[in-house]
Length: 601
Image (cartoon, rainbow, N blue to C red; front, side, top):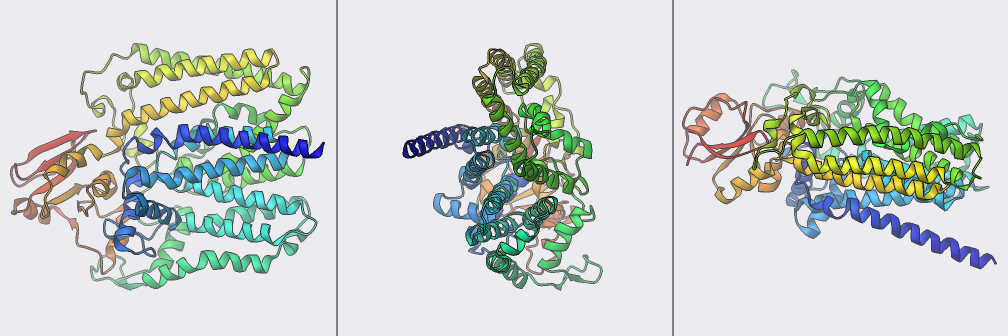
């Protein structure tokens, strides 16, 4: 009998993995790889760093637009550079490693849920919750490393959990944990080791089991960690030492701190304390930061209030609560962006997946089933309200005129652009006309999905009710992607790069008016360095003070000389911030509230 049971479990696990891979392929590795184009700011800056890594054959010091870019850990850029080496510097190739890391995250969460709750169903639900979560989906539309942080942290917690189940913790769990921490440090700095160590120390203290650390091969694990994490840091420090500052403008001492000060002190300690220089970022209000968990895990967050108060308190529950709490409390006392909460999503998804699994296995009159029906009523009321609002906006909005630039339908809130989703606050009632199809799909999905879940739970078809909610989220995420593609001209300068490319010759100059990040897609898609007018700030600021930094920063006087000279200039500028020009200007292209001007016909 046992071989048959084992075969059945293996067969079911295989089906679950294939289902997760199929849904990942649909949402993360098909249309999502190829559209929209790379966005200005972090998305294309990070892709450009990886492109220059390949072009320079330098895998130690990161560069952006030819200037040292010392603030980020290298692992994500290494993976993108490897992808560019295989497939060429294409935008989809830059997105591919992040998509693969996302698939790995879903599989790790499935295995973790299966192990924590001794249930394939719990692991499957947890992985599906993450796969269809708005937070994971939207922040894999931008090339940032935070989902990879989720992967390494989840893997570390899985290995820690396995070690707890062993009478004598094995070396492979200890060394695997150390390797996961080291890879996380190479992904996003010190939090890669701070988070897992804080979680396990607090968990072991609560369980009065600190002796586990002594048994868990600490010395050899430390050696594994150092062997993986240390070489790049030492190499980067040697390649980027402190040096004299020929510009004499920063800092006052006339010297520039090297890699170790900038990377560890400025970018991690001072950023956490809101004292980083330059201060080119904003912080999400604390209540909003916590409230966004409901958005990132919709609609599953409705179950978390039941999942967080379990029928019995066990080790699995404690570990997940500590895991989520460490992440959220850590950032509650620091500067933070909206996506900093992402590492808290896997433990919350696991808690909810475990609760849904128990609800499904209960008899019809069990309190868990009753709670599930009550939650279904709340979800239907919220879904109906959201669906009616989306339908109202879709019906009320007048169809936009053919060829209208969406930027003309927005309100401007430049004070919010330092937030990762700040540009979306520009959306107005007029702008809804450009999103009619996504709004209609959203309305149908919210109403149909929550209604089907309500009916199915009341007729004791709990599993089908959950599947209805998963299907609702698949449709919603496709609609969200369509909306992002529609909005992308505001967020990307790819259309302007396409307009320049046929006219661009070897001696021509491409110049961005303002910060490099505002038009950074030009550099990536044109495969060349751009000059900067009145924008010596943000990502390029610190590296610009090194002696080998190219002289690409113009002030008004140097730019006027350049514009009046014989070279052809292509100037990227916001349409409402065109600088004073000393001579004729010819419009080449306009898109998303930005335009390209040239000094020659």
